[in-house]
Image (tube, rainbow, N blue to C red):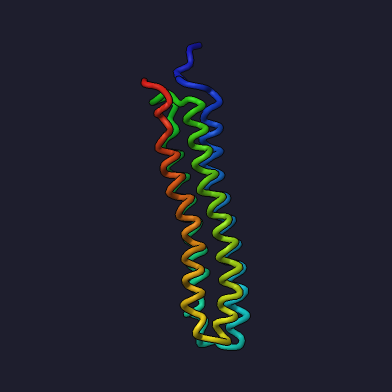
Length: 165
């Protein structure tokens, strides 16, 4: 029986692993950032309930990290179709590295956002002048995930360039 599969048969494994890594690690960062900064918001809300809505910024920023992983996972998974176009190990490795770059950057950013968000909203409850500084630190932490998203997009675009078909 002839197979209609073209390319390396194990290559899609690495591609799908990259898509899963992007989503899983980014969502782990988003979950940690949301939980850690959410605890800070809840603790701060006991002392200063009027600041709760203003202090929800870290929770929102952490939630965006999961979207970055979703974007890369969709880009990768739509690029894997070995029956339509040859899919080689180079392509699988490109997608794996793309997913890992985005996912691990999202995980690191989520940890930073969670820690800064927790301490920042508690400190903001005691000294409102710290709000702008907290937001700036959160923006720099979010930028880490954005760097991973950009590199992930560049790496995933390299898939399909291994051979001239």
